[in-house]
Length: 119
Image (cartoon, rainbow, N blue to C red; front, side):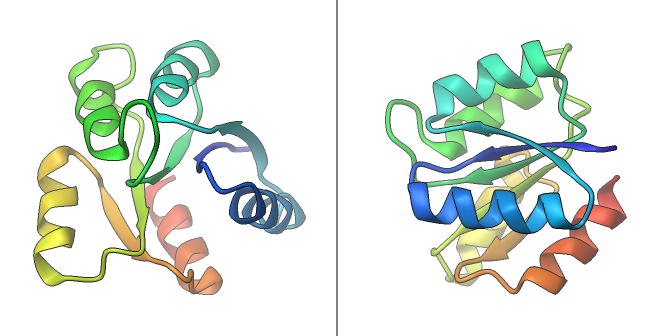
């Protein structure tokens, strides 16, 4: 079973996403800020990370840069999850190290396809 790290500070969003992923056979772990995300990426070795970009403590942009700069975590695929829908936001997310990008509110079937492609 693939393990997905969900990095989301909104409790309702992370609970809904976690439940839906679990129903599709994925294991999930949760971080609520970028600092926790970096720690969990290293200590929990998730197969993929779903990274909200607007986070407290350390935002998702910087957490992604640091995860991708760390030799122990740089191979973990990261999908940016964001309400930022401007075309340059996608480019900035990819430049920060994200492997994919999905706009909120999430199109869950589309997100599942991206997860499966990256695993």
